Image (cartoon, rainbow over all chains, first blue to last red; front, side):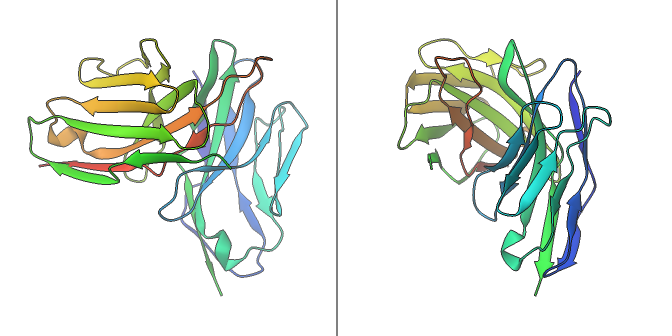
Amino acid sequence: GNSVTQMEGPVTLSEEAFLTINCTYTATGYPSLFWYVQYPGEGLQLLLKATKADDKGSNKGFEATYRKETTSFHLEKGSVQVSDSAVYFCALNRGGTSYGKLTFGQGTILTVHP
Amino acid sequence: GAVVSQHPSWVICKSGTSVKIECRSLDFQATTMFWYRQFPKQSLMLMATSNEGSKATYEQGVEKDKFLINHASLTLSTLTVTSAHPEDSSFYICSASVSSLRGVYNEQFFGPGTRLTVL
């Protein structure tokens, strides 16, 4: 079946540090891959996505590249800010008859200190 | 962006009672809504998919008679936890999306969640 594995958190960084949150997946076929972010007290928001191999999703300084050979979709940001503190979820959508159904990783808590 | 609300944001109830959670799309019509459950420090688990005007499709292992889902309109879906027990205590999250005529995946917009505690 489908599964998503994220690096365990929490992750604590100082402002302007480099961020990597690892995400690997298991799926049949060619899933679409997503990163969602959940700020305190709010619902999940789509951060970025990639729909095919070698695609790079990017938004708000965050990037992730769909690597089919390593089944990975690691999230990176060159310089984090305090406002990036949130929970980050990696997810996949297998498509086809499962159209729209998301499988999530366990989430990674990021805390950025001034 | 599109906004999805949930009500209530938290609820405490006694064991054996039923609890209804509402999910509303505030500024768009949602052809499909999804209900998730999240345990502490764990991932979101999809419970069911709800299409307006039709019966919900439940994921394997989810009790249909316990978690009643109704999607009566394009802006409202409800989840009713019937005869709730302490093990049903969890964080319930809904999301809403719009089907595309092209069949392309459309973004899901998530509600802020409802914390259910069953005593």
